[in-house]
Image 1 (cartoon, rainbow, N blue to C red):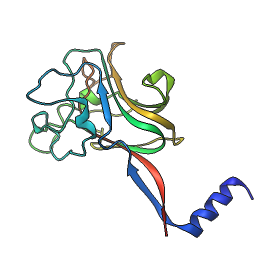
Image 2: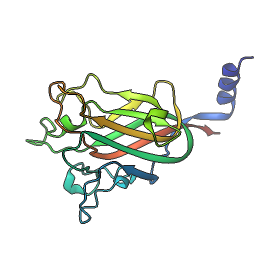
Image 3: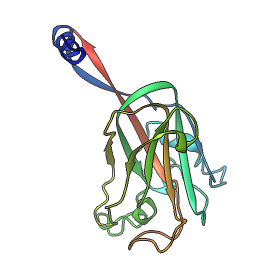
Image 4: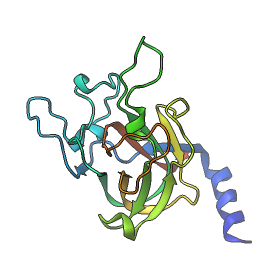
Length: 191
């Protein structure tokens, strides 16, 4: 009996199903170039605090990075290696006429997500890279399924504006404007 067949058999016999746990919740987070505004509390930790009911900058639930930077980087330390199933990202949203185009979507376009065992994205595996979205089509929240269920301790959000010209709709500078990043691992639910 192969390993896969054995695993499926055990899953059917001893489990009701699969559950997912947000292993990034309230974990340690870091960002490059934070926006320095102590009274606003826009720190890296905001993206893993479980709050995302107000995605505006003034809502107190988002990471806001410094202006006019060519690189944006943020990461969460999951404290141990996990097999990542999927990631959900809620990013800053300020809408015109309540349901029109998000005026800050241009800052999110072109981002990447890496899973790594170190704090360096170059040591990790690319889980997702936006190459196709526009300000009209980028979803919020963004649900990312890691194609190979990557293993890692760190999940790293990265964006850059280092090689102009940029595609239509892209902002001139890169930003971390994450309101929440949920990192889900799969667990089997016992009977």
